[in-house]
Amino acid sequence: MRMNMKLKLNGTETEVQDSLTVAGLLETLKIDPGRVAVEVNLKIVKKCDYEKHTLNDGDAVEIVNFVGGG
View 1 (cartoon, rainbow, N blue to C red):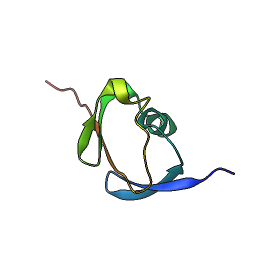
View 2: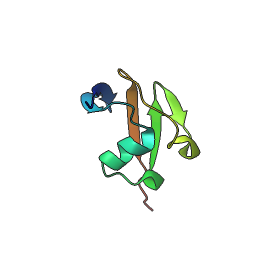
View 3: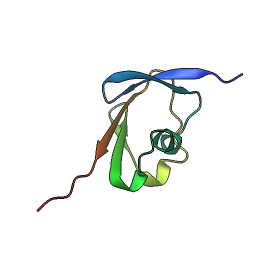
């Protein structure tokens, strides 16, 4: 049986698969990990840690897109 957990994602409560990593969350959301910065509970997660940083029920996740301009 697959369990779900709740995250606060960019300020909105969202239900996702339990034991999801940051990389898994980005994949689920169809977000290119090379184009964003991710913060979990007010701490920046390094890109090299996306695969191993497991999210927990109740975590606050902020995903910020990089925008180019000139």
